[in-house]
Image 1 (tube, one colour):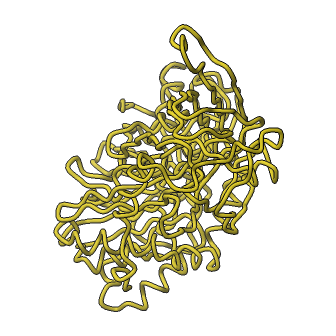
Image 2 (cartoon, rainbow, N blue to C red):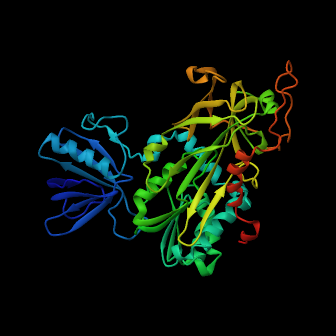
Image 3 (cartoon, one colour):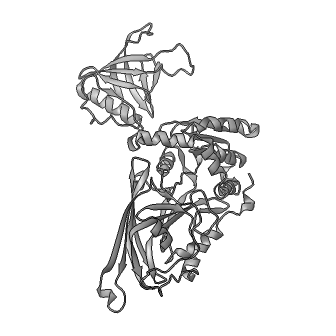
Length: 495
């Protein structure tokens, strides 16, 4: 960041005393403005709450809280400083430096085109992407004990995290840990139990206050855990982390867009050789046939637990590597689809679930939400097409799953599935049928009761054509079973 030397500064605050005018060098640190005076005195200002008003082409009014002194005086007042620059370009560059330093953007205005009197309001990267109403509802939801209880009582979720941490004490012992989106602080407590030197539990909702109380109730651990209330995009920490731990997964892995905050926290706080728990996420997908569901609702994402015998081909998966991916890669996720049907049936859509990897130095552990495994609070997701597709055993199914992020902290799902020509000469042919769907992951249909474990005739005009997938085909069984074998045992979830 450039240094602005020879800036003429006038302190016009009502509380100003002593010298009212001075010349200083203006320098920037992340989130801070430093003014260096000729007598080696340095004054620091927090940019996160600062406002800048353009008085003229070369003059700015800088309004902020008291300079940082380490004390909190209830009688302190805001300070107003008038900055005068030698040229208009220098004034404009200073405004740009303020915004870049605090990781925000000028409200809808291009750099250097401010009218006199325009206020520059700080916006974090989170604020730039997310609608305020969505963010308010999101943090209100996770600020309630009832919803934290729902997650804590998910023994697959909580038990797997506990096992992943305590079985890899070598990674946590004596290390600095940052818990991203700490919620009740349970993962921070696990990390401290595993010997962490210090844990920073970062939580933006009101649940941060409950986390403090929970941690204070553990005298042997509380000295090593600091609760930080705020967003990872905005807060500052005094040191780098050796370990980043978080539970950023939503429905279909990516719903709620917290994975982006997890990646931002990696870039801001994780040391170059640090580890992430989890480090990898995989979205698993397979075509399914479910006449009951299709009759109930079509062209909708459905959250429920389904029988894996409804899958009509082995699943594929798409990998997200949290350790090296860019945040922008989560804005649009484009997944090609290609399957071979194992039975003759009607395909009603695409079934999806996810798993994540805790790649510890001692033990690797997967948390899976696969169908047929112990049910989690995430369940599974099925994208139901507007029209079914008719397939024969051995026929190729192709398509595309496109996830496009939107400002309501979720994704629009664009699903296309096609059936290719079948039989002699198929290599010369093309697509026989195509069905599509545009679905909002933010507004799924919750169908949490267990579906019927059998299927009915696929076509009333051809009653002899039954779904023959009542027993999982060997290929599907082989694909689903490893995920089940990697589940945490309930016996390992003692908390």
